[in-house]
Amino acid sequence: MSTKDQPEALIEQAKDIVINAIGATMDLYGINRSVGNLYGTMLFEDSMTLDEMRQQLQMSKPSMSAGVKRLQEFHIVKQQFTRGSRKQHFVAEKDFFNFFNNFFTQKWSREIEINRDGVYKAISLLDKILDDSQTDDDTKQQATKIKNQLIDTLPYYEWLENLSDAIDSGEIFKYFPIPEPRQPE
Image (cartoon, rainbow, N blue to C red; front, side, top):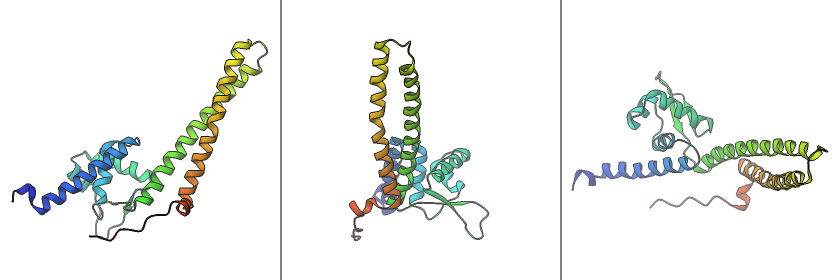
């Protein structure tokens, strides 16, 4: 049996596949891939110090620290007290339903805030055009069309806010229950 077929090497290879997938997935949602790899690495550990993270991921300590702070912003990594250690220890959220709740509801809230604010500011500008008696009919017609388009986007943000609230409160699980865990094979 070659070294790469040893059980320990296969376990590390399996973990690396998942870490890479998590990094790629988080990259899809606007989180730097290296931060996603950091979360994936932490997922397989009870707790880690910045030095341990740096050693495993070959990243600089400032990059590692910034990555941990980013993950803490989403409440998917927490600092953990470890008796007898002066170093900070961090632990990753291992429940993917909690991860989903913490990560996506924050991203959606930010999307809602940014876009809804943009829509209202744009409508305010368009209203100035529509209220101006010196604006020609073609321009008013164009402003009305755009304003109506913007107003039509508002139900989406209301729906997304309701979805986010339902996930945050757990109400969504009445309609989409969490499947029972599969028994290990």
